[in-house]
Length: 154
Image (cartoon, rainbow, N blue to C red; front, side, top):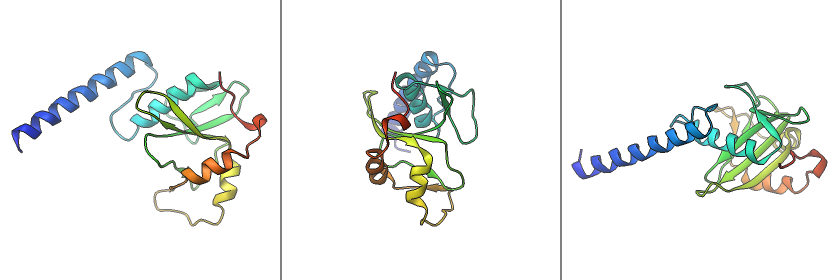
C-alpha cells in the first residue's frame, strides 16, 4: 500500500475511534460501534433527546423506543438520502430522520407505521427484508399525519 495513503487511513481511523469514544462517554447506553449500527445509534440518541420517548435497553426486535404515553417506535436514521422500512412487520410508530453533520436533523416521517405500509402494499418483498428509496414518499405522507398521531417533541 502507498505509505501516504496508509498514513491518511491511520489518521482517519484514529479520528473515528476518538469520536466513538466521545459518543460512548456522552451516552453510555449505546455502543456506537463503527459498523452499520453507528448511524442508527446516533439517530436513536438524538431522537431520544428531541422527542418524548425513551430508548429500549440493548437491541430489541422491531422497536427502538417507547413514547411517554406507551407507543412503540422504530427509529430510522440516515446522513444521506435513503431511509428504509421493514418488509416483514409493521412498526407501531415510525420516526425517520436525516442527520446533518452539525448534529441537527430533519424530520422525514413521524407517525403510525400502518400509513407507510398502506403506501407500500403493492411492492414486492425484497431480499434484504427492507423497502428502500422511500424519502420522497415518507415526506409526502408525513404532511398528512395528524398532530395527535405524532410523537411529540420535548
